[in-house]
Amino acid sequence: MASNAIQIPRSTTSPLQAAVSLSPSAGGSFSARRDSVHAHAVGKVLHPIAQDEIKLLLLENISQDAVRAFEKQGFQVDHFTKAWSEEELIAKIGQYHAIGIRSKTKITEPVLKAASKLLVIGCFCIGTNQVDLVTAARAGIPVFNSPFSNSRSVAELVMAEIISLSRQLFDRAYEMRTGVWNKVSKNCYEIRGKTLGIVGYGHIGSQLSVLAESFGMRVLFYDVLILMPLGSARQVETLDELLSQSDFVTLHVPELPETTNMISAPQLAAMKKGAYLINNARGRVVDIPALVDAVKSGHLAGAALDVYPSEPGSNGSAFDDKLNSFATGLRSLPNIILTPHIGGSTEEAQRMIGDEVASALTRYLNYGSTIGAVNFPEVDLRAIAAEQANQVRVCHVHVNQPGVLREVNDILSPFNVEKQYTDSKGAVAYLMADIADVTPRDVQSIYDRISQTRANILTRLLA
Ligand SMILES: NC(=O)c1ccc[n+]([C@@H]2O[C@H](COP(=O)([O-])OP(=O)(O)OC[C@H]3O[C@@H](n4cnc5c(N)ncnc54)[C@H](O)[C@@H]3O)[C@@H](O)[C@H]2O)c1
Image (cartoon, rainbow, N blue to C red; front, side, top):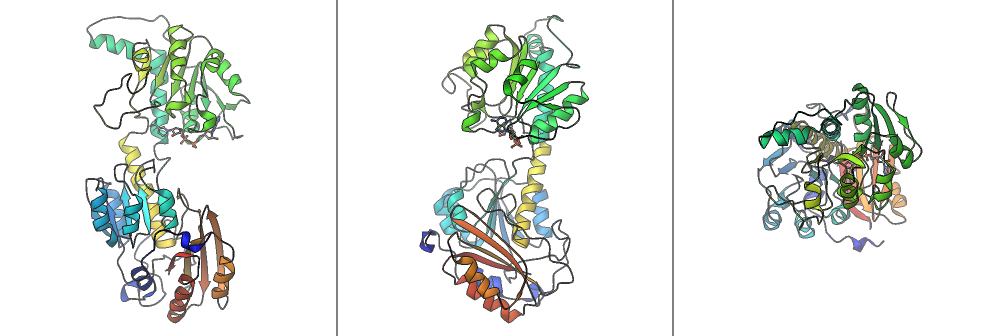
């Protein structure tokens, strides 16, 4: 790919000058600042070689814990409770090196074009489709999110649903709210000794496995990968084997073409009579009209759904047939628990999201690590040892094209390259290298020469 395919020109003044100036704030030498502790820094604590203070913009009321974590790193933080419009972002984003958002702020191509200093984007949420990920990557900007911080919250909700379905809890509670006393034990069961079938044994499925066993359940799971079972859980070879043996089937797979309508009429028919289905994964994994039929016919004894093919964009909206044609049929069934996609919605999950994304942004700004980035090659280097005082870390984002390594290695060849790693994702590649015995003059020259190579998108030096 030609270098002119990069659509967004990065500022050639500020990052360039900022990145190579050895100011008093950077210690005036390559010796590390040791004023902060960072999990990544088993060895030397790195910072951008820059006189500019790193400025962060946090929108949508991101947690004060995250603000404090950034301030502890010496970053300047502007914190706002609301999302910003595209116009506001375009007007003001040019002064920031990093931005933290939730789902309402849209980082579009025009916003990225105006973001001349922007180095990194943090989505303090699960999804990242509010960001133009491809344009961001091509501008050398990794995007981080927090996909797994709420796994425990989902697993706990599933436990609640298993007991609630087994005891018809929601129907009894609803009757009491409408003034009806209906003391029932028929078809109400303990969950002890029952079999839970987990489809997808990833972050959520495996947590759930442990919780379910502690309630005395027998756990089976089905996954496309062969995975180490936790506790006494057992992996089965086929989905049908799991469906035919389980009293409760719970889904924890991602939404993929292969998982769309993964549970439809034939799979429902393969489930035990009187079993229950639970879906907290994604709405399209279950063929819901087929599920309505299976409950109506009495083949299934109930179901819990937290996710739907179409979900309203805001609270207070209707959940009706206009949104999903099956809504009325579903709402009128007995022993059906319907929740508005709250599986991961807890205070603890929010806090974990704050910690995780704040530390990913800090790791990138200070150490260049892109582990966990959703739109970028994932590259990291082990820490520079504390005694390796005048080592410099080169972070070079470039167009993924032949000849780049030869050019960069030619520039680095007078030095000892202690370690180096490069990877690519689509049109963008990222190289990290730690080089030894570098003087301030060398830094200027290394920076100038690498950033002038044809494929350069962004070069930063850390020390
Ligand atoms: N309801 C909520 O609020 C909520 C919150 C968090 C996550 N989720 C959803 O839960 C689901 C699971 O999340 P996770 O964090 O455990 O994901 P994960 O990536 O950790 O695990 C998914 C597992 O599914 C397996 N898998 C993929 N395709 C499969 C297939 N065809 N058959 C069987 N197994 C398959 C994978 O190998 C993996 O082990 C995702 O869809 C996620 O979006 C929902």
